[in-house]
Image (cartoon, rainbow, N blue to C red; front, side, top):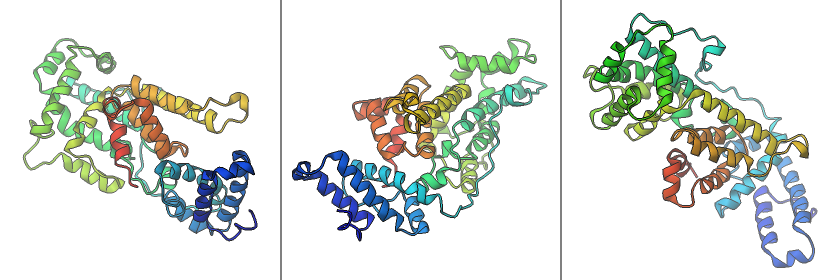
Length: 371
């Protein structure tokens, strides 16, 4: 077989493999394992014959140009196999400089962030909420690694580099003035003396949740009204368009800006605790290493550990937060590909209705992936 297939392309090799594995007569002369070894050798030889830059160009499009047409599940398995074979050759590819907007690191009390400075409640409130939501978004930012791993798939705005700063700007200029002007927040300002511990007290209120929560109730009411009234409708000038903040930032960052249909996602951010998101990502990275790159069998995690971890966070974290962790994994972790997301969604729910209820952000992202 090695001699007969010496002139075949990668596409033809996969076609031959499909036909061979589907032929019942094959079982009479070779086991699946033996066939797998033979076809891996044939595939490796064909990949090695491709020019590195040509192979890199194919990798940039997730090897779509090298895979034969057919069932998408089958193509995903072949894509995964091809990535494993090609990565040693792709390491010889010339490095391409990726220009990205600089993103400040997440800040918190432990890594040197300056305490909130304020001379009145307005400054305290705006600074506390803006910093808190910024830290949540920064914990989800997709690294520049996606430029080589999933280059043909646009990064959603919510996890794109630069969006956290953009969102903070929108809050400070248009959203927080609306919320701060409500009766419940003005009453909160007068209800106590706000000293140096005021920022922690406000964050504690946000994280406590529950019925009758002045900050969250007011936040929810204002975001619900924005769908009809427009963001910042109460406190910005008529010639100012809050959505332009997103549009301008998206031009610089190279992502599609959010629009009115994305208000539920923008609304959700305040409930995403930055520490919980960071911890979720650390655990996921550890399990990924153990499941797919363990140094020995003793350290190896069981099959499906990464998927189960994400499902747990989708269910345990506030709505849409776990979805964003899954999307970040898609862009940063090679094995968390399209096939992985499909299996993940089936683990989340047995029906489309259940999946949309539990993981609306993930379902929307998957359904809009380019073919």
